[in-house]
Length: 173
Image (cartoon, rainbow, N blue to C red):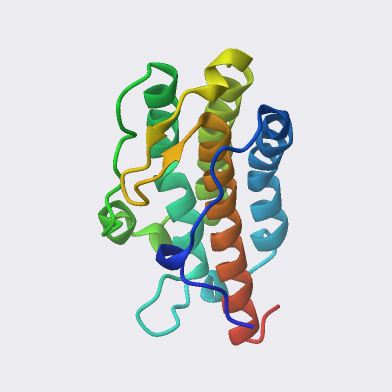
């Protein structure tokens, strides 16, 4: 089954604070899930592209590339900025990073370290701060910190699912 394209997705907003600990735990687990899924694959499988789309390894690198954006948006919400930091919708950083030339273990280790910073920051948030909303720059809907964390978790899963699609396409699942 083909998944819905990312830029066509809509996301729930106004999620309750009671979901926050579960979503943060999901975010904490993404590096482990990526390591489990990719750790035993060979470089030719990891770096193979399907048409002009990113390879499995480039999808993994993309998760790392967006960590500064996710953290910036957390700070935007915690400091009550009027709008969250916009993303580069061209994904220039990922296109220029040459993630296929970086050992997978390095990408995954660096992603785990960057994600730990995000999770630690989320764990220090006072529950009162979860209610503030700011517009998401692409979706044009108000998001609170719970919504943003959910958005990040969904983005993680979108790319993990893409990696699984590529594995199936390559007969390497």
